Image (cartoon, rainbow, N blue to C red; front, side, top):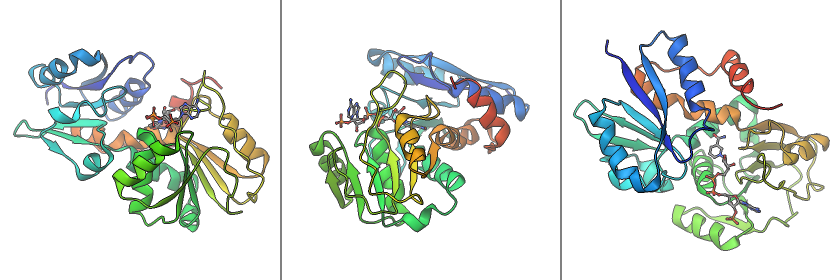
Length: 276
Ligand code: NAP
């Protein structure tokens, strides 16, 4: 078998954990290949995408700031990527056509089910915080598995309104000062608040009972102030590291031909690269 190439294209890219993640799987499955960080400035995106095929890449991941800008270069866009308006995974088929998909929602649901096996009990009391790219993927995934009456909280209400209208999803929209939670709710932070170097997400959680759930897409730090406050109130909590691992599974399978496993060994290996 020939040497297989993939990578992650973004700007900046040095911080990305994806090379570590795919490197673990390449070693585990004994695959002759490499997954490289591809530092591509926005003005070079077109040339870089054309170069993928010329350089013999099987495809690559796409990250900030190219997730939307890459769409015009894709030959076959998946229905969910089209709906969300973003691509995070590219691969070439046997005929050389470039496919684009957004696997964030799939990764999110896979991890949510792993962390909270009974989360579907909360299908009618989900609160999504945020209205950016990650929120779109999360909202579509939740809606597609039957969640209804979703509440969306965002600093900029209009952005949440545009998001829900674009996605054709009815939701109750409010600002971050909203506190009318149903006692038993599933809260999902999709904003960058709480990330290392960012201000914390502070919500009034007093209405929530201790059997509520809190999930944060942020995984650096492992426990954000939002998760710490939720835990102090007795809620079960989960961070987005597992989502990062699960969203990578379909890409690895497309490029390297093996569906990789997300297991405790991988989680520990990835956790070791993050500050406590
Ligand atoms: P984005 O499109 O830039 O959206 C950012 C969101 O955060 C918006 O809702 C924005 O609100 C809100 N926000 C940012 N700064 C804020 C502030 N100071 N006060 C209040 N709200 C603020 O970003 P994204 O691509 O959706 O990513 C969001 C987060 O998800 C990032 O931390 C990213 O690392 C994480 N993520 C994790 C995974 C994973 O696999 N775990 C995958 C994707 C993303 P406004 O609309 O008001 O600006």
